Length: 80
Image (cartoon, rainbow, N blue to C red; front, side, top):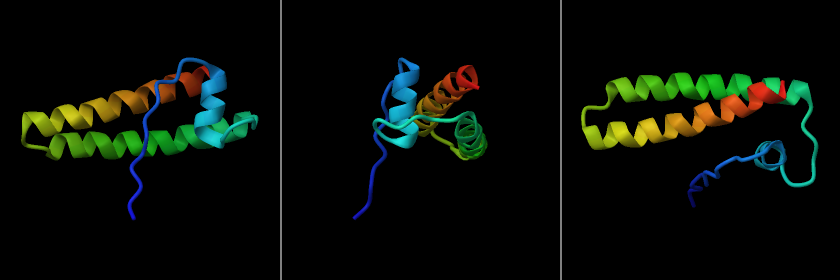
């Protein structure tokens, strides 16, 4: 069985806590920095994937995924 990630639009810091560490748990600055490092790696992988894609449709899908990662990164930066 494969799991498909569900992307949620993050609107507040409360949502960041739920998204990254689960419901009703607090996120510390150290955890936020760790998540930021993970996001940076994922962004780098997506940029490489984008450059390797040939079709415009596939590039648009990868760009949407990149936008979600950048949005999460911006919110985490505000937290730190």
